[in-house]
Amino acid sequence: MAARERLLEEKIAAAWFERGTQFLQAGDTDKAIQAFRKAASDVEDNPKYALALANALTAEGKYPEAEQSLLRLRELNSEDPEVNLSLARLAAKQGSVQDAVRYYQNALYGRWSDDQLDQRRQLQMEFVQFLIGHQQRYLASSELFILQNRTPNSVAAHLQIARLFVDADDPQHALQEYKAAVDLDGKNVEALTAAGEISFQLGDYPQAQQYLKAALEANPESTKTRDLLTMTELILSEDPLLPHLSTWERQRRLLAGLDLSLKRLDTCLSQTSDRKATADLQSLKSEAAGVEPRLGAKNQPPDSDTARAGVALIFRMQQAAAGYCGPPSGADHALLLIGRQHHGDRP
Image (cartoon, rainbow, N blue to C red; front, side):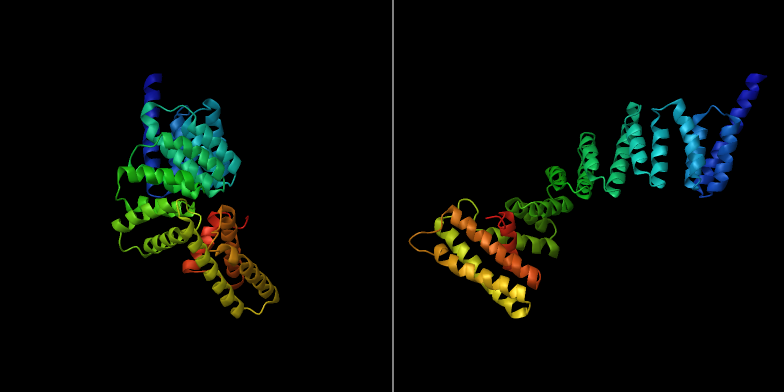
């Protein structure tokens, strides 16, 4: 009789659990809580029912009761991934970042069966998104390194990880993932475009040119990609410090950059009446007038040190004009980026 009673209680509890699940799916959390309570009270040693009740309480905003229930479950099995995950989500809802991090980590490094690897990967993805959302970008990158090793070798998976690295302010590793996606699909527009944009951001303009060209071939309608490719090619055509330039080509680029920057200063001077701006811009004009003969000497083209000093001066001229008269465009913008690339503010 005891066995039959126990079996009947389990059937009733299972029926209440099923009804609670249906209520939850229908969005009726209050009725779901009532049903889960009955299931949990009918069979008190079933952690599945207690966990369902705790999660429903969390969804209803009854955080203290939910936490008590979850902590009781955790006392029974501290390595249960589901219980730790529920505690992590509850802590996140309450704004307790440190507790959420601890429980997420406990969930990730708890006991997982071999057939739960995909669930574990999704959980790690959720944890990374939580960290990024709470400005924990260094820890997010660390978790992403682990996630990289668990990522299927597919375009979609590499793109997903790449986006997270971007959100974590880790462009170098984002670029690795975009490159991996391009290796699998050489015409993937997102991967090619992002690889080109990040290469540009990192100052690797030859690589940016390569990816942006391919991206534009794959998506000729993209004005943004076309404009960025134009700027990339402008930088490569005007940079005096690129390797393998002839002495005379380096000199030509330096003089062209100095001349354009002087014109930019003159335009800026005509637009401002600020005394400090006028004094700074005139000082740079005087400095440029003193340097120009050395850069343009026909019998003695500029050596490496002189060329670097010239690029630094051009950068300071463009930087000052941008500061006083607004952002540059076209070739002036290219000169500003060239100077920044070569640390032109520190000759």
